[in-house]
Image (cartoon, rainbow, N blue to C red; front, side):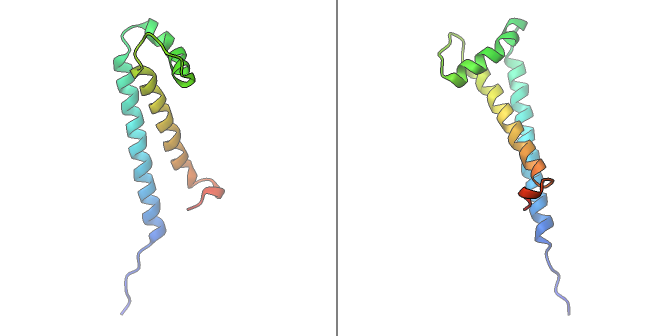
Length: 94
């Protein structure tokens, strides 16, 4: 009698797809919170400077939530994209 075999490659690929989908969802949620936090166009215009000041460690009079939300969302977006692309690139084959 033949025993069923598990295709572990397809199971791992599906698991990584689910993980990357979760990371993309977290990224879009953080972007939604960042957009809800922005109250006017002046704040939106200053976002790149606030993010750069937060990365460089310069203190600002404004709160730190918006730069952290946007930096976290961009970081998760890059990680999710890297996970999605990793199965298409030959040197990242799992």
